[in-house]
Length: 146
Image (tube, rainbow, N blue to C red; front, side, top):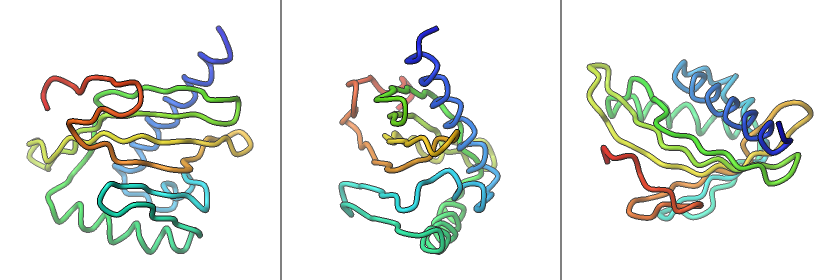
């Protein structure tokens, strides 16, 4: 197996663990999944840098509360694609469906992440919203249920 394949597996494994932590709403473990500083990028708000762990914690808790207030109960990965960019850098594009407690779909989202290896662990350095009809890196079609 090539280094490329091994790194791609590591990236995908990291992301699956990240979504598990997100679903548990474990803010301490979730924050450990990020570099500090890290940045979020959206079409509506532009670049939003988060410099410190304390700043991250202050933004995460209200964001999770807002998601729960919209009816969110859990998220499930529909697809995850990973590309090693070097031994220490990678990119992930993921499709996730967010569900309500009754199992109804709240929304489907696509995001692109860049990750850096920090010692033996991968950490998110940036994440970017991808809004339909745009497909993002790789020009990968959306899952059919969108």
